[in-house]
Image 1: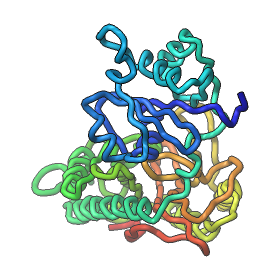
Image 2: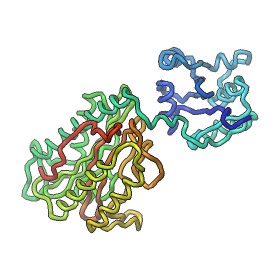
Image 3: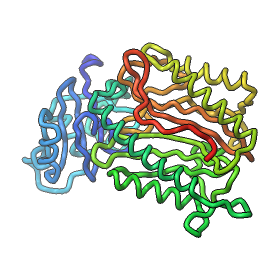
Length: 375
């Protein structure tokens, strides 16, 4: 059997769920299976999901446990049993699976005499090239992110500065938790969900993925990173701004100027054919020449520019392509973030992020928001 003729099996759970959603449009509460035979899709779903599956993916061949085990004594079958039955029904002696395929189902296939082979490529490489519909979906989520960011920055701007430097809003101490709740309420009104929103105050911002907590203070950077997911389409948006209520220190001002310049540099390089690692290398060199030391150890004390310039956005918040030290060239239809940042323990972080679509001649920012530091 030639490698190219070996079908691929995916399970709609974990890190494979969005590959299945991409191919079929189907989302279900419980995991279900997908067998890919070239351009032919076989969906394995329960009777509870069969009608929805037929509507979401009319071109797929539907299979249910009752159909697969019609000649057997009725009993509950595991998903592994069901997948094995489908693969055998289709006459396959081997299947390909990806790196995140469930181990238990792989074992069930092997025990049933089906060879399980590691897949050498993504299930659907075309996911990296977004259709006009997908770009519109991501732009919608990005506009929601901007609306939530606007509400959060307005709240900081309207806050009073207490003698202690703590911000107060509506007579109460303004906290990271309050702003995250405000972001979530704003997004829910726009049919988006928020999970993991970052409002990191002062030194907390030195941890790029630290979500932040506690009171906001004047004169220190507040990193606000909002990444909503549309409840209807499943597509994400992503935006980050760093703001200071009142006057920032000269060091933070310099960090912000340089991060903004680095983002402009990266954006100027975004166009079809450009190597991802070329953008990453240019930004790293820019920060080095600007005098910002980068250290990647010890763990928890990293500083400087310590992450990739950006990542792809779609049905996953982090997907291909990335702007980082890896081979690969940008193509029209890619959607990705451009988000350089600087992080220094004891001082905090500055990150500026926009989500852009790669066009035939360059890029388009999907939704914009001012990049002013002080407010």
